[in-house]
Length: 185
Image 1 (tube, rainbow, N blue to C red):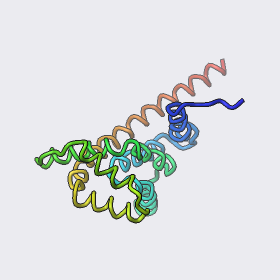
Image 2 (cartoon, one colour):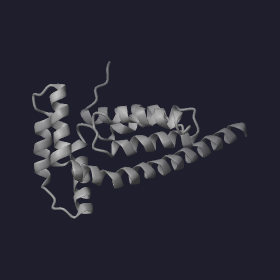
Image 3 (tube, rainbow, N blue to C red):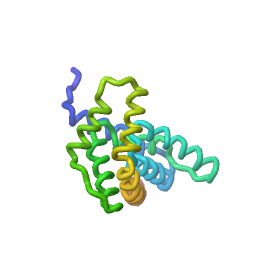
């Protein structure tokens, strides 16, 4: 008999199988994985939903072949999913408010951004019309505040994700070694 899951159980399972399991099963050293997660989280904290995965791919190519710096591409891709259709509007508003505060400008209400975003993303436009409407929204209406405001979020959360992942991986490796030592006794 097939087990049924509600929406939140499905989301929890999806996160576990797409974000946590690849981290656990990767044979690479902790720094390699932590760098990948940091890159993914940093790009996730930009107002580029829809092209973040492509930008991570470009970052990976440049890092690998130009700077000889390696990171886990699959983990970076997976962690860009932090910002998605469900989380995009509140996160974009946080970017906008942060940017407006940094520039000393007045802040528009959350409801206005929410309505504008819904009009662009949930309208009956073709793919390219949505891209162009999004571009206009970001460049003319809300873009400067979001572009400036996303920078502290990307830098802070990207850096924090690196250190949290390193700490988690070190603890996990210590526990693994401890279990192996106990088995030998």
